[in-house]
Amino acid sequence: MMQELVVVVRHRHRVLEREFYNRDTSLVAKELIGKWLVHKENGSILRARIVETEAYLGLSDPASHLASGFTKRTSNIWGHPGKAYVFLCYGIHACLNAITVDWEPYGCVLIRAVEPIETDGSEDYGEIIVRSDGPGRLTRAFGIDIGHSGKDLTKDCIQIWTPKDESIESPPRIETTTRIGISKAKDMRLRYYDSNSAHVSKRSQV
DNA sequence: GACACGATCTGT
DNA sequence: CAGATCGTGTCG
Image 1 (cartoon, rainbow, N blue to C red):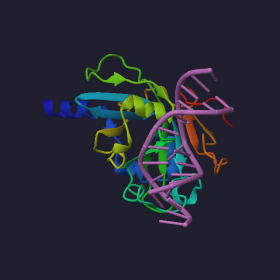
Image 2 (image 1 turned 180 degrees about the vertical axis):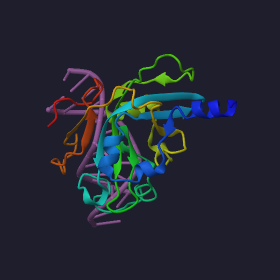
Image 3 (image 1 turned 90 degrees about the vertical axis):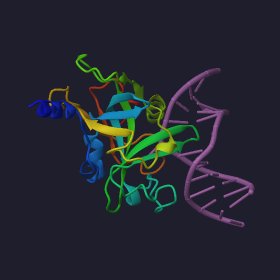
Image 4 (image 1 turned 180 degrees about the horizontal axis):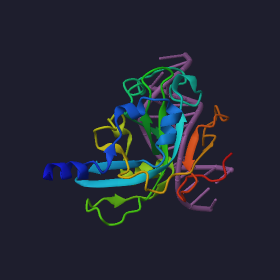
């Protein structure tokens, strides 16, 4: 009886399993909107709600780091669903991605923005709620760097959770646009965001 | 080795 | 709109 109750409580948030990631990259990008990004470190937990993502379609996508095949930096990570892929952009910013399918053309999802999670105060985990719009800002807020590249999002210190009661949370209104900041494949509409959120990194995109 | 480049952000 | 800043890939 007591055992059962404990189980229920512990499952209020569920860690996304590998099967979630091992699907069509665009679908994963879309479905990551509204999920929780979590970083457990030194006994504290940072978490926030994902409101903006972009899909990168591996070998078939000129804007992807796999555009000209696997390299040292991408091998052993791309093609392994649920792994984190973190790279340094412009020498300054770490960008966090979730690796998707284990079949060609492979893929990953860039986490571009998160927003604070509304809480009713009924939880006493002591999490710190983080606000950050933009891929470089969110990694800085979460303390994520390229040393985290290759970590397993299904069990290591960085995870993505399904909210305790997704159906009751205000549902995301998902819109699609072209991706931001790239010079190739500008026409591919692979950016997803929650237009109900005030924390999307860029507004007025087509 | 040397060199060019970039899925960004900030300050002017 | 220029500049910061550095890991990575490419070329020699």
